[in-house]
Length: 182
Image 1 (cartoon, rainbow, N blue to C red):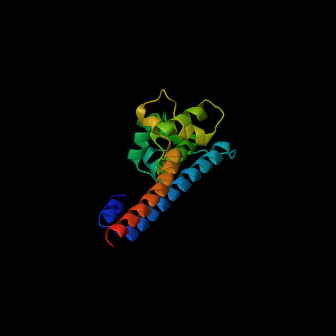
Image 2 (image 1 turned 90 degrees about the horizontal axis):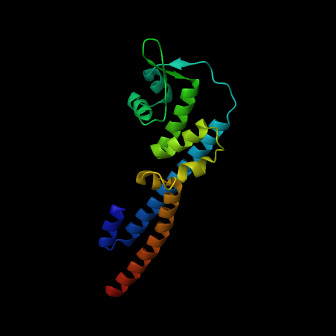
């Protein structure tokens, strides 16, 4: 957007239009990724396949999931996961923990906030009816201001609509500039 504004300031309307188009494509990609994450999570929640009996330490779990140990630690500190410990005090990641971590990883990579993910996991833990899209994108009014702003897909769709309005503005500026410099 910064580059788009710079292009407009220089009356480079073709460049501004191209930048706006690229911005719209990026928004579309984020919407697709957010929706794909929802579908993956829905499939994981519905999954009836038995997981193998597995028990991993933090570093092994991080490698298995393709995330850092710091990410696992952060998710645990933020209440997304509660782990059992072995006799020697090591955290043990079992099959259910890994499934939960896969859900967290997928949603975080699609830019869902920790608060939105926590809402979903709370719903799963309490075996409530799961409408993943609604849970992730509709914070309760009583929630913290950060989570009230957590409406990823809605925000992206509004940004997409704003690109259409911005395209009209660019066209109007182009007409005004053409009249002014003739």
